[in-house]
Image (cartoon, rainbow, N blue to C red):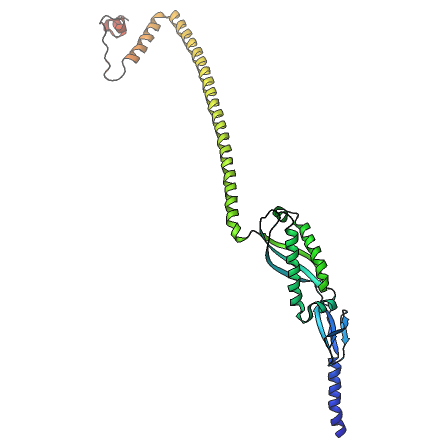
Length: 291
């Protein structure tokens, strides 16, 4: 009984030591085994691994591709047109031992702080060597490649691999926006004024052409109307002449009736004529009785 009571704590201690010597490396991680702060082994393959209990510790690092947003910075391109650039990078830890030596207990936070400094330096150097138009054009892909290449060489000293760098946004500084917008507004207003002037000029040409066409059409129509009217008058005169030749008395009567119609219009028509005027031949009673 006394022996069982003595062996039970020893067994429990052995089990505890056994479990404390076993650790699991996830497929998304890499592990460093440290003994008194010094790296004694690197575990990169997933699965069970062992360490010395009590005297050895295990530190895990993410083996996945990580993303890092860089705080917006102001750069000055070669044309002195300042821009605010917002970028981000994708990276991963490829050498955990070198990473541990570079950042120590600061871990990923210290590594990202140093990576930010590297990226800001590369952004200023590369974007400062080109014009703002190149930064805002389709050539920015080549610029991002240059930034990534420069940052990749420096990041290796931290045990990091920079996969790529992207520019998320490129804006003007707030203090330059008003002036830029005013200049853009003035340019658009000038273009609008030019378009209006060209439109007015075209409208005047069209209006003048339309007026000319109206005059030509009116003149042509008047000429044709006069021709038709002349032909109609000639035909009418020919008919009257023919009628006069066949029955002169009827023609005289028709002309007199037409004259009466034109002269005796309205309710107060007054004519001052001699009583024996031929105008009244067909109005006299004796003439009507004789007929």
